[in-house]
Each structure stands twice: as C-alpha cells, then as structure tokens.
Image (cartoon, rainbow, N blue to C red; front, side, top):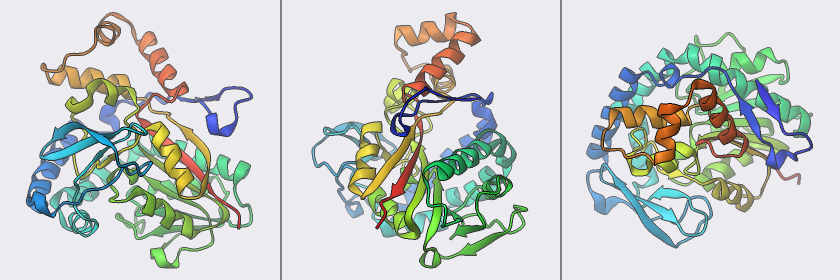
Length: 346
C-alpha cells in the first residue's frame, strides 16, 4: 500500500508503505550476526593503524564543526553541528576502503550469502517497490528521450527483472556489478564499466551512500552518467530515523566501514543541492524502526529505552505499532530513506 498526501509537492512527499516486512526477512539473524562478526574483525585487520586514517568534513553539508557522538569498535563517530549528520572521522582513505570492499571476507560473505540468500525476500519487500518508485518518478519528472536505466555496483540483480517488467526503459545496464546479473536475472542486462555509462535516463544506487569515502564525489559521478534531466535514485540510512535516535551508540547493526555516513534528512537535502542537482523526492518509507528498537532492547539488557517507547512496545497492540510506523514514514522520521535527484538541464 502506498499513499501520498493530497496536494503535496514532490519535494515534501509523504510516503506510507506496508508490505508486512519483518527484520528477519531481509536480515536473517544468523546471517546478520556472521556478517557483523566478519566486518568488525576485518575492519580491525585492514585498518589497524589509526594514524593512516584521515580527517574529513561533514559528508553531507561539508561543515567543519562537529562534536563527538560515540565510539564503535575503534571508530569515532561525530555529529555535525550544522546539519546534525553523524559520520566517522578520521576514516580510512578511499584507497584503503576500496581494498577492503574488494578483498575482505566480510565483502565476500555479503555477496555469496547475504545477497543471494535474501534475494527472494528483498525482491518482494524492497525491489518491487523500488522499481515502481523509479519508473513513476521517471514518467513524471525524467528525460523521456533518455530511455536507459543503470544500477551502480549491483548487489541485487533482481532489480532488473522488476524494472524490465514495467516496460519503461529500452536498455538496462549494470555498472561494475558486485554480483553479476548474468545467471541471476531473466531481464536483458548489459554489464558496463562506469566510464562507458553516459547519457542515461536513470541511475540507481541502493545502500551504497553510507559506506562511501566521499558521498558528494559519488553523487557527482552518478550525475556525470546522466543525460540532462536524468534522475539519480539512491537509498541509505539516516540518523534522523526513530530507531537510530532512540538506540544511538547502542544500535547493534551500525558499524564501520559499512556505515561511515549516517546523514540527516536536512544534510541529505544540502548534499543534493551542493552537488548541483535538483531534489525531486526525499522520503522515509521504512517499515522496521519500531521492530528494530524492540529487538535490540530484547537482546541487550543494558539498553534503557525511554519510558514512552517501552510503554508503546510492551503495552500497545499491533495496530498501534503499525500506526506509529506509518506516522514515522509520513513525517520523514524513519531511518530508511530514499532520494530522487534530477540532473539540471544544460
């Protein structure tokens, strides 16, 4: 189910989505536990020398003023005073991160187990919705003459089946895929290098922004692939979301380098603007915030939830929980955010 507040401009679209998603559907506990174990272990091995890390400004607004937020597994997270984004600094260099994402056991596990083992659930709960969102936005606000769609560093190839089924794009590209679409999808997909992807109508990057060394450079590189008026779609985690605000440093599923950038809603808007793109949509259709808080508190007795949150979880029924999650979605207070940005016509 998807609803839009009547007469709202696209920029302020309030999206409410419900597919019955459960945390275990896309993050099976056993897989998540092993992935986190490998990530924490590999990060300690690959980035063992703190002196090799570099200081960075806020990845969202480029602000220099920050306060310490919390430390996790030897990485310092900071909170930007200007936009409220939370980010790791000092952080590993871009080259060190590339080496980690290419060679680490954690990255291999993500491809060989996470991506494949949760593919069916992700297709039902996430990819179908992503495809509908992108194709609708392209119909409404895109360059209809540039009918090529590309996904960057693909890790969920079934997105191409969902996009192809809607018949909006003539050509589909997978740019430097993490998991090759060959043998994984029925749709006709061409694998291309980033340097060959130009003049596209739409580009997507799902769950990539949070572990980029420089999100602004990543966004500008995506924009360079687009034709004038083309659309860039991305999803990420936002520190503005309910579960991250409540759990903060106790959040069990946030760890570096998978989560270097937890940009705020305000910061994401500034990021798009300073990269010279037009913000078409910024919404938070997440379905798991309350579930994530409940599960984290159940597994870690040291987590002290605010009295209201504990009362909501323990004393109110499923309908109240659903309505509360819908409220978070409608008012851009979920931690799962999706963004559509348009390349300014030249």
